[in-house]
Every structure is written in structure tokens, then in C-alpha cells.
Length: 432
Ligand code: BGC
Image 1 (spheres, rainbow, N blue to C red):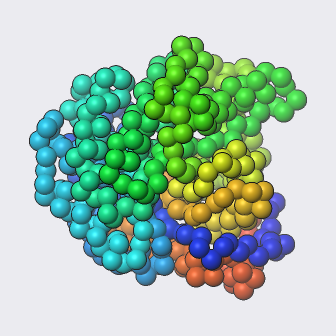
Image 2: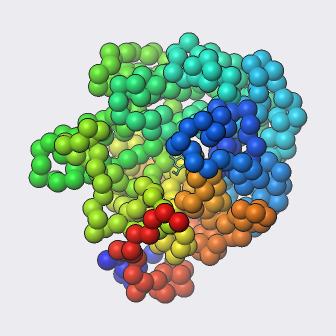
């Protein structure tokens, strides 16, 4: 079992930046012109609708005040394309005005903005045209960027064109979508650059693929294949402009080569690879599972080691952690998770990774694409009243921000009391 008793101080450079994030559809509420709003009524995989989500569309002013009080220096957010252009070619200027007010208030509060232009949700009309499934539809997204970016550019510290383009499955159909999204990233990158000097990226969903049986050649091949389809593919695409994925023709996209100013890494935990299953994945080691939420969730394990094992692959540009967090009902898990992941990040920096900042996922307990039970937030949100209640982990995080890391005093105060806490092998409670 892991113990924080032996943990050393973890101090980041003075100019290292800390914050937290969210995404439009997951927090704003009533995002009724998006394809997700439609899917939530028609698809079984969305048993619960987003509804009013965290009601941030109405409460953003007090939210920003709270973020400031919690000491955050950067906030990652997305702008909902479906609010700006609810019908094709029809613009909602009042929605734009509200976003501009949000951005201005964040800037005035001294909070930098990490802006994601597309965090999975988009207008229903775009989806009906085939969405990013059709390469020729990218032009609508670029038109949206041409409309939006010049209006908001002065408020944005860093851009993410898209969110996690390799997180769409590992089958030939998803590979076609991934390729289109990669092209959309490249063209989006150049569109944003026409107006803004701020660095541009697209968040990358880093996954550590663990061969279920390390001695087994087939599991190792499965892990390598999945590592390529999720991690290697994107790194190679940016380095060379080449799109190389199994079962599809390779392509060269000249606009893609070098089209990224920093690596925006989202990381949660490792996944298991097996050479003996149809999709090459398998369940986690039972003995190492942590039951942190009352229901099924893929976050059943801490695996901070992946930062040390993989971040050196992203050495050639500045690196930002744009998502990292844990869905846990018991906030003590979040405190431990933060401590362990910061320790791993520090070790990755010692290996030469140019890490500039950390954006925790998530700011508040929000809509988790079909459900509300996975709670990632530093802030709890009452589902009836929408009252915000910062969790103890947000105070722990604030102290870390103020001290630029985990000092011995912080460790003693927050981590010592958790030393003998049994974190592993909780009974798995499912359902209710
Ligand atoms: C997504 C978030 C999501 C988080 C936790 C990430 O892949 O970008 O929107 O809430 O995972 O599942």
C-alpha cells in the first residue's frame, strides 16, 4: 500500500501555473442546440440528461469569484459552438456577449484562460450534416473559428482547438473520425494563428497501456498497438504530417506538420491490454482496484507512474497538464491523488520535461457525459439548489498553489493523517 509518510517535498518553479477546468456542456446547463442534448433523449448510453448541469450559464459571476478565492491562476473552459451558432449561419450575439463577459471577468480576477474551441459537443445542425465524420464538413468549424477567434482573442492565454481526438475508440470507423479530427486540428491551428499569438494545441488523452500479462507476447503486442493508436499516432502526426493508423490508408497532410505550440496532456489512469479480446482491452487487476464512486467508473486505479514513463515523449515542446483528476465520493482520495500525481510530475520534470502548468479536472462536480455520479470536482455542487461547496481538497490545493508545491508542513498537515487510511480494496458497491 502507498504511504505518504515517506513522501519528500515536491516544489515546482516559481512561475509554474495551477488551476482547474470544465467544459461547456458539462457545466453550463440548458445547452439545447447541441447534438448531446439530442443524444441524451435518444441514446441508451446517456441514462441521465445534462439538464441544468451546474447552472454555470447563470452563475458564472459568483463562480469566478470563488475560483479566485481558491487561488486558481488559470481556468480551462470551452465555448459552446451551438450557443454561438444555434442554427446554420444564424448567430446568437447575446450568447457571445455572455461569453465575453465571462472571459473579461476571468481576466480581471487575474485568472488566465485556457480556451477549448470544441469539447466534444457541437450544434445539432452540424451533426445532422454528418459532423466531423465527413471531411468536407470541417469548413463549417473553420467558419465558426473565423467568426469567434478575432472577437475573443485578447482574453485567451492558450488555445485548444479540439479535445482528445484519439479518444474515440480503436476500430476502423473511429480511425476515420480520428483522421478527420486531426485534419480539423491542423486547419483550426492555422485559422487561430491568423488572429492570435497565444500558443495553440489540442488536448491529448494520454493512456498508459499495460499488458495484462507482461510475459505474454500477445498482450505486449496489443499494448503496443493501442499505444500507437492512442499516443504514438498523434505525436507522429504532429512531427511529420503523416496520418498512420491500422486498417486505413496512410495520408500526408502538409498543414499538420509542426502544427502545435505546446503539448496539452489529459491523463487519468492506465488501461489494460490483452491480445485475447476483440477490442484488445481487458479488466483491471482486481487486487489493485479502488472503489471510489458508487457505480461503475473507469477510474478504479491510481497510476501516477505514467507521467514519468510517458511525458519524456513530449520533450520537444512545453507541456501543460490540461486534465488530471479522479472521480471519488470520498474527498480523501482526491487529496492523495493530487499528492501522488504532483510527485510524479516533479520526477518527470527532473527527466527534462518542460512542464509549465497543471489544470486539475475538474473545477466542480459536473455532468459526466451520461451521468452525475462520477464526481471529479474540487467543488461540490448541490443538485437541487446548485449551491457550491468547496471540498477539503480545494483547500489542500490552495495551499499547494501558494507554496508552489507540497512543502513538508503541507505534507504533515494534510497527508500524515491519511497515512494509515486503508485506500485500497474497498468493497465495490455498485448500482444505487
Ligand atoms: C474529458 C472530460 C471528462 C473526463 C473524465 C476527459 O476525457 O475531456 O470531458 O469529464 O475525461 O471522464
